[in-house]
Length: 102
Image (cartoon, rainbow, N blue to C red; front, side, top):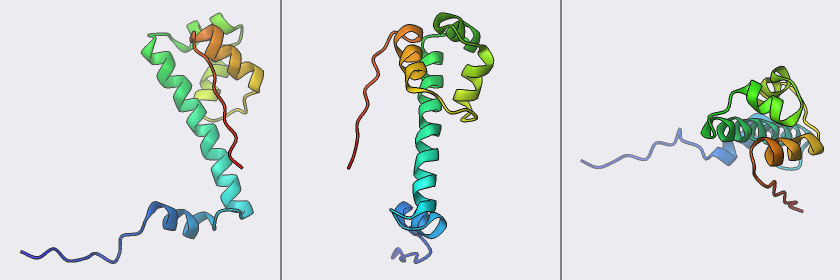
């Protein structure tokens, strides 16, 4: 049986171009920024769960509230870099690495 090419399939980049505009446009830049914030929340949540910590336990370790940790994990709050560093270092015992792509 010969497999037919499905022309309805598009690449992820083509999908993003269509939905949010091409890279460099304001709508695409906004999407990319929001997606990075979402990823930070997911990374914190995964690391917290891997260490068997509740949101309250993590909050207590870094001197913040359970509500604030929840808002970060659910992408409902902007996070300051100093707070992110404290969560990673003091709360999760890790090291934060950042990079800049130009």
